[in-house]
Amino acid sequence: KNHGYQISHFRYNSLTKSPRENSYLLSKQIEKLDSPVIHFVCHSLGGLVIRHLFYDYPDQKPGRVVTLGTPHKPSYCAYKITRAPLGTLLLGKSVEDGLLGNVPKWTSSHDLGCIAGTLRLGLGMLVSGVPRPNDGTVSVEETRADNMKDHAIVKVSHFGLLLSPAVSSLTTEFLSQGRFPSI
Image (cartoon, rainbow, N blue to C red; front, top):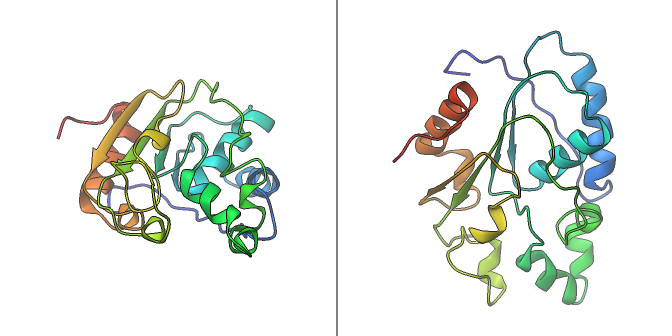
């Protein structure tokens, strides 16, 4: 917003709806936007919702996509949680065509930039063995998507990706240039 972009938030329920179901709801919200260019900035599971959106509804307006801490590969942390008693209740339908894999490949013509964190502070601290480096929840390797245009790594936690000035700068640079600057 501080860089001149109009913001439209999309809120969704990851416990009762799968990423694919939420992508349908997002497509309906997008239809109401009156803009020739629409960029997407997504945190964590939101990036998987976007992958379903572009797969199921490929005729999107021009724009770029930035994902923050999105596990584009099956999430080790989610896998371990679902193996615990009542673990599937914690993650709900986010594992269905989502956190455990079975997500459409990124084949969109829209540029995709992925940002990963390396400050190990988050849900993954409760789960042993999350591959390093990680942001406390998602490993850096899990944030790499096939066919992404660029990848950046910042020393912040999983939820810190939402608040970091460095991540904000990287994001706005990618939205305007299609590449992350060297930091």
